[in-house]
Length: 183
Image (cartoon, rainbow, N blue to C red; front, side, top):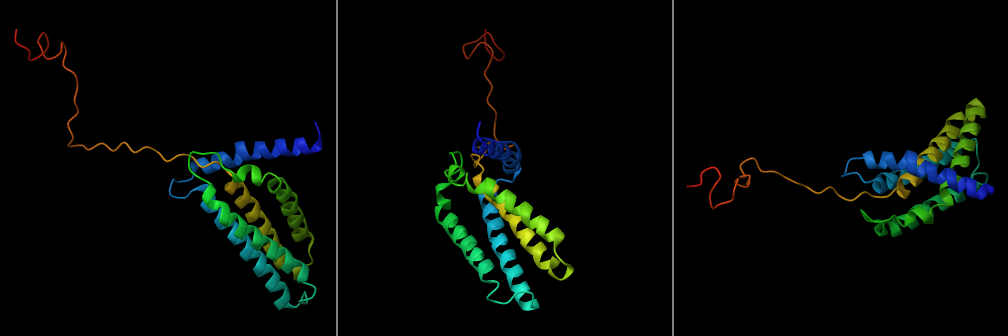
């Protein structure tokens, strides 16, 4: 088994045994894809705040921040792309985004770990900005896994009206031999 197969196996395990049970426990009015898309938007906003904070505080010139701005633009393009194909995800049917994001999911975890390590090792004057980046990456990972979860079918409503009569069969049928029968 190659390293790529092993990574895909770990990704499938995470998706099936960690994230899918979380998605299944969400209330029906909050589908996992909606929460995942909100996390993606939150990751973009947190990343933008971190970049702006580093520029405003003076730890990064606009020219130095250009790489981070380009990465932010790629994240924004990813969000817009996922938003456009979002209507392909339907309840009770296989999620087409699951295989489409199979390369992005395992790749996002090491970046989140790297951001956490950089945040822990950052000098005090850069720590707050680095932790915003870390939070952005963690929220991105949460969002991409929730977007990849299968959407469970809506529950069938079996509303029972308490005033509604419940019909039960008579013993022996209508012709007799049972309760209320003549004869």
